[in-house]
Image (tube, rainbow, N blue to C red; front, side, top):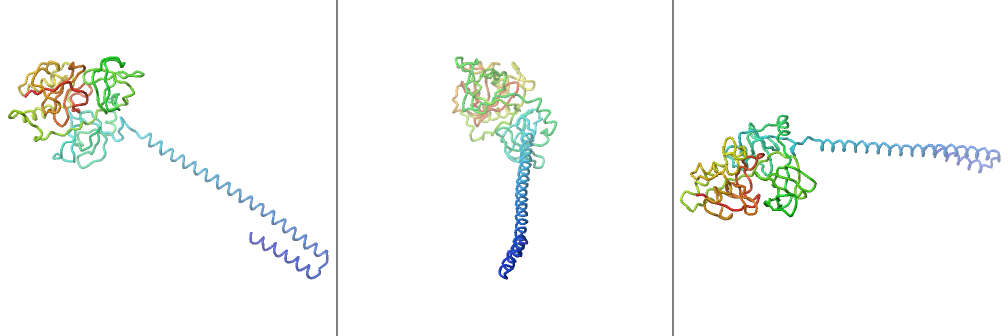
Length: 370
C-alpha cells in the first residue's frame, strides 16, 4: 500500500516539473495520461484490496461462528453426559446394605464413634468416600460411616436396586390427611407429616392409594411427589440415661433395656398376623413378644393392648412406653417408644421392623407398662 502512494506521488511531481519547465502540450498530455493510468491501476488494486479485506472479515466471522457452534456442541455434549450420568433411585455411586437386620451408621470411621442412624438391610446409600475399612455415606437424612464389608456396590448393587425399588409417595407439605376413600367427604384415617414415604398401591388422576403401616388409605396427589425409591437410613440417637426417669425404682433401666432389645430386631420381617421375632411379626405381635421378655403379657391385638398399663401424655413419654395410632379414636397400630422422639415398630411388608419419628402420624394414646 505504501508503494502505491509513492508511485502516485512521483507521477504527480513529474507533471508539476514538466509544467514548470514549459514543456509542450504533448508532453503534458503524455504525463497526464501516465498519471491517469497510474491512478486507474491504484484504484483498481485498492478496490481489490478492500474486496479481499471484506472477504477476510467475512471469512473470519464465518470461522468464529463455526467455532462458536462447535463450542456449543461440546457444551451440549457435556450437559447431555451429565444428564445421562447413570443414577438409580437418585444415587450416582450406589451402595446397598446386605445384613441380617441393620447397620449402625456412626459419626466417624470407628466402632467407638457414636451412632447417628440405622441403615436397614436392602437400604440404599450414596457412597461419598472411603476411610480405611469404612465408607462415608449418606442415606435419607442420615450422613455417617458404615463398615465396607456390609455394603454391596457396582453392578451387583445396581441389579439389587432394580429388584428392590418401589414407587413411593413422599409427602411434600407440612401435614396431609390420609383418607379412607379417594374423596374429601370420607373419614380421615390419620394425619401424616412432611417427608414421610408411603408405598404406592395404586395411582389415578387425582388420588394415590397408599400403604400406611399395615393399613391402606388415600392421599390427594397434589400433596405428594411420586418416585422410585429404595429403603433409607433412619436417624437414631440413643436416649441418655439422664433423660430416662422412672417413677418406680428400676423402671428407667428396665425401659431402656426394653428399648435396646426392640432395636435389635430392626430390619426384621413384617408378616400380617405373625408373632415370631425371627420369622415375622405384625405391629401387635412385635410389641407382644418384646414385652413378654420383660414379664408383661399382652394380647395379640393393638386395640386390646391399649387397655393395659397406665395412660401417659406425649410430653411424659419415656423409652419402653407404647404409642397407639389409628383413626377416629379406633386403634389399628402400635409402636414402642425408644426416646428422643423416636419409635421402633413393625410397620409394613416393605419396611419390616423400623425406626420412625414418633409423630409421623397422630397418636391416639400412650401407655406405660412398668
